[in-house]
Length: 452
Image (tube, rainbow, N blue to C red; front, side, top):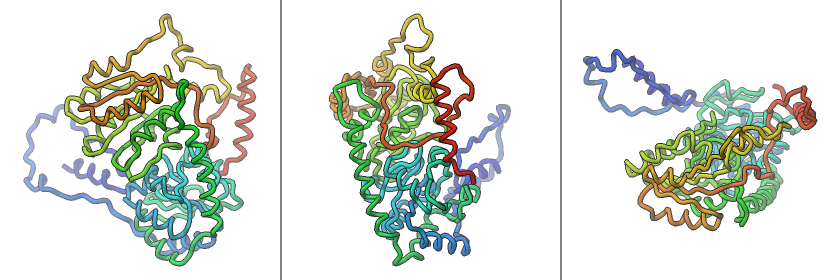
């Protein structure tokens, strides 16, 4: 009984916020226990909203007022706190542009003029340019981990400072940040009120709008239809044109897709973008998509998954058909682990054991993903082009059950615009000249990292 109560406390704690596994020993699972009737009484659990400390709040307000080129980085804590409206109000009243982490994507409608999109290693050119030049980074509900910060080499502003708004004191104070340990909704409301009549210099908003226009042109080009073997971005473009709306939820997890989706997917309403990227769990996608559909039965759930991740876990397709929870799955087949292959090449290595053609084989596998999905009861088809994909996506809207669409993609092409360095170590000693050059570039990039 205490363990179950503790589980609920962890699930609703704004710092821990789950997940929880409650395990019962096998030898007690079938035993009877005289539970008090009160144990089963309905109880509403709510998460607490820590109020900001007076001194920390004053320091935060002073820091913002003195900033000449501030930028907001919104993380998953904004969504967890249900502070999306407060984030929007804060940005609009101060004129400070907003960039988002993977977990924070959909915290602000990306059609908003002050929404710059993703930041960091998989960031847009607009967000990263603003972050590089910022003198104050206002981090709201984010852990500021290596993907968000470009392994702490992204911020190049002279004397740049950080303001950490977070319920976790550990995260609020990272990198010598001014900490504001508080709930995001409460903190943003208090700061916005205290800054009444103040706004960032006019050129901050002007610069942000110009940078966003440049990025949108690059994104549109990357996602434009093609008659050749498509890139991940071109498939994303087709899905976005057909499905990106307030009622859709896009779900993904591992491989190269999360980086492209972080950059390119036009998230609108809160929770419309669901990405498991804390651990990059291959195989999460279809099971996760089914979970989202169970939680939001009226939502149009679209799952994007690579062939490698699909092979890890796919049987929830059968479950979705069995329980009548319709989802749409778009499977991008690049015939291997394209993301890791590109990482291998980027560190000077040769293609090895990631694409099927480079792995040991006596017979190349010819996996018919469409037939496999059909065998589990789903509607399935293989399309040969972006045009066919768009037609198939339209058709799925009237299908009576889960549909899987397979399309072959290029394993090497990624969106070149945007993005930032990521600290992936390269061997110091190698007989390969390409590795030695990659190591030289790595050492040079390390010099841009800020330590504390």
